[in-house]
Image 1 (cartoon, one colour):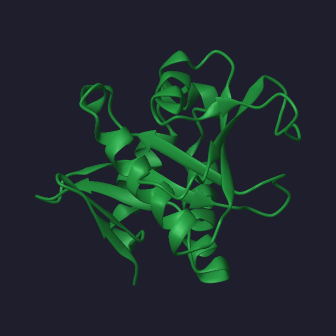
Image 2 (image 1 turned 45 degrees about the vertical axis):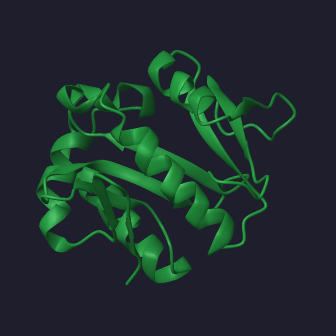
Length: 168
């Protein structure tokens, strides 16, 4: 089992105990940028897909929690079937956990894992054009908008993360 740790955080594979909090997030207004909120059946399928990604690929979105075990969201590498490129994604479940640097800290660790352990030469983050907070985080991570990248979906910008071999 892959577990990543940072100064404040633990990134771990999803577990059955994550089902209800993850479904609650997917059914919330926080899913606006990703076509949500989802009804329970759609959300259940999404959680199952996230968990199944680990089985199929051996990697996937990590559940993000504090070192004390409080669940914060998801972050990590993913490459679902039909997507143009491997993606580094992040989702913070509660607005009260935004602005504390959790997503950046976790995304840096997950990106380094994708580059070093998974051997990715690059990664992208697909961010809705109106999601200013997520685009700001991509910029903070050093990603650049890549207008030449294959389109993900209408209304989304592809942010490119380059593997320069240095610290993520």
